[in-house]
Image (cartoon, rainbow, N blue to C red):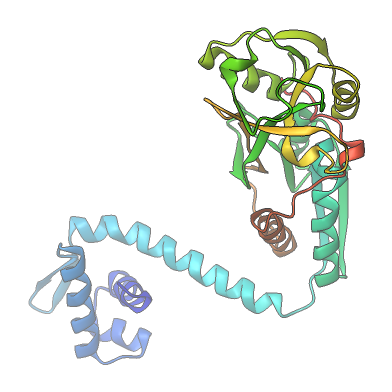
Length: 309
C-alpha cells in the first residue's frame, strides 16, 4: 500500500464520483479505477459498490475512511512542519524536569536546541515530579522530564530510555570483586536506600519481594551524593543508577540480576495538548540525545529524584 492509494481512496470517498475524484488527484479516470482495485485487492475487501454510474461506499469503506483520513492528516501535518522548519522559529518552550535530569541531560538538550533555533526562548524549571504533573495539567508547562507518573492517567508518558540500577560498594566490601550479584544475595546485607516516599524505593522493594530478599536497611538518605559518600566510608551497600557514579570515585558498580532493577525516564505530556513546532523540535532533540546514550548527569552533585506520591 502506497500513499497515493490513500489519497485516491479518500478523494473518491468524498466525491463518490470517479470523474470528479480523478480530476481532484490529477490522474485519468482509468488510472484512478485501477489504483482503487489495487487497494481493494491488498486489503481483501471491497471499499465501494459500483451500481451503474452510481458509486456508494461499503461498510468496510466507511470504516477504513476514518483511519485513512487520519493518516493523511498526520502526514500532511508532518510535511508542513518540515517546510516550516526551514523558516526561523519563534516562541517559548517551557520545560519542567526533576533534579536528576536538570543537572546534565536537560542542559545538554537545551544547548543543542538553542544552537539550532537561537530565536526561541527557553524556560527550564527544576521541579518535584508532582509539581511537574500539576503544572502540565494547568498549562504552565509544555512538557516534563521525569519518571512515569503512575496513576496520573490524564498525562501521557513517552519512555526515552532504560536506566539500569546497580549495586554500589566500597573496595573492602565482600562483593567488590563481583561482576554480578543476584538480588537474593542482598538478603541480610547492610544497605542505604532512598526513603519509602520515593518511586525508586518502591520499585526496589518490589524487586526484593520478587527475589525473596530482605536487606538490612541501616540508613535512609534522600540524596544520592551523601549516600555514595557513606558507601565509600563503610561496608554499607547502596543501589543507584549506574550513570550517577563517577568513574573516578573509587566505588565498585556491580550489575544486579534476578530481577534486574530498571527505571524508565521519559517525557510527560498533557493528553489533550497541541504541541507547537518549537516544542516538537525540542522533544525530537530529547529523543536523539537519549537514544545516543548522552544522558549522563554530573555525578558529584546528583540528588535523588523527588518523591512521587
